[in-house]
Length: 548
Image (cartoon, rainbow, N blue to C red):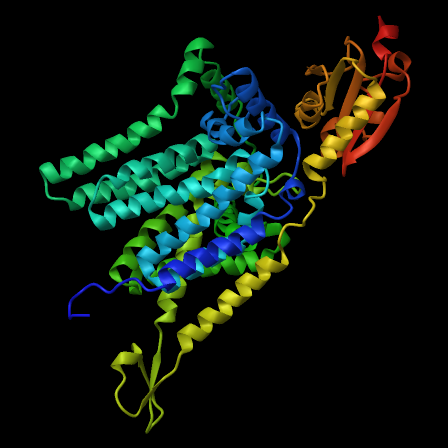
C-alpha cells in the first residue's frame, strides 16, 4: 500500500456486524410465540391489523394512549401491515417476528453509529450492549407501538450524524424518516425532534452563507416535510370528526394531566435515572443498585468525552448528552407519571427513543478508555502520561490498563443481561394462552351463540380476548358501559383484572363480577377460570333471556 492511500476495510468490518446480528437473533427469535405478553393492547392492535388487511378499513389513528381519548400515530399500523397481510391478520407471531427483525436491525444501526464516531471498539461495545440488553430483547418480542422506535430513532440519529460528518445534506431526509416514525409510534417521540433539529441547526450554521447553507436548509425542510406528511391520516381524521383528538387533548390538559407524586427535582432525577439505566440494566426498581451505577457511568462518560475525547467524540458526547438531558427534562414536564413505577404496567418503553443514545455513549466511553495505556519506564518504574503504544521508547513498558477495564466492564454488563433475559414463556402465557381461553369461552357459551364481552375495570379494553374469539369466527360485541350490564344477546363474558382491584373496589372471582352481573339476574356463571395470572374470566350463558 502506498503512503497516503486509504486503508482497505479489514474482515472485521464484515465479521463484527454479522456476529452482532447472530447474537441479537439468537436472543430474540426463539420462542417468539410465547415470550411476549398478551393483553388488551396486543388484542387491539391485531384487531386493527385484521380489519386493515381483510376488510380494507384504513386506520387514521394509532393505538390509544394512556391520556384519555388521545391516540398515537396510524403509521405504526401501516408499518406492521405487511406481516399481517401475509397471514390475513390471523398470526400474531408474524407481526411479532417483524418487530423482532426491527430490533435486530436496531443493533446493526447502533453499531454503525458508534463505529463511525469512535472507531471499532466503540462500535463493538455499543452493538453488543444492545444485542444482549434484556430491555432491548424484551422490546423485540411482543406487539406494542413503542417497540419500533429503537430502530427508527437509531436511523434518525445515524442519518443526522452522517449528514453532519459527510457534509452531504441529503442524509437529513433519512433523519426525517426516522424521526417521523418515532413520533408516529409514540406521542412522546416528539421529544426526538429537537435532538435531531439541534444538529441540523449546527450543520447549517457551520456552512458558508449562501448556496451551501441554503442547500442544507432545503434538505432539512425536506426532512421536516416527511414528518408533517406522516401526520396526514391524523389531519384527515380531525377534519372529519370535528377535531376530536385535539379536543380530547385539551380536556386532558384542563384536567391537570398526569398526577405528580414527586416534586419537579425528584421527578427529574428519577426519570433521568430511568432513561439512562433502562437500556443497560432494565427496570430500575428490579435492580436499583445496578441502575444507579449504570446511570452514573453514562453521566461520567458524557462529561469525560465532552472534555477529553477526540474532536468527533466531543461533538457526539455534547450532542447525545444534551439529548439525554433534554429527554429527561421534557419527560419530567410532559409525563410526570414516569417517576412512579407500577409493577405489571411497563412504561420504560415509552422513552425507548433514547436507548440508541445510551448504547452509543457507552460504546464511545469504552472506545476512549481502550486507548488508555499508562507508560512506565523500564529503569525506574515511574508512571508517566498515557500514550499509544507506538509512542513508547525503548526500555519502556505499556500497561494495557484501559483494555483490561473495558473487557471486565463489558463482561459484567453482558453477564448481567444474559442472566436476566426474558423467560421463554411470558407469565401470562402470551397469545397461545389467550387462544386457549378463547376456545374455552366458545365451548361454555355454545356454538354460534353471540358473545358480549365486559371488562372490569370498565376503563380496560376487552380486546385481549375479543381477538382470539373473532379469529375463531365468533360473533363478538363489547359492552363499554359502567355498572350492571343492562342488555345483551346470548352469552355474557366478564373479564376481571386483579391488578386494578383497588380501583374496582372488590376482588375478582365473584364479588367484582357481581357488580356487573348481579346473581339475581344472571345466576351463577357456567364457567369461571383464570386465563392468566390475575385475569379471571366468567361466562354467563343465556342469562339475558331471563333478564328481559
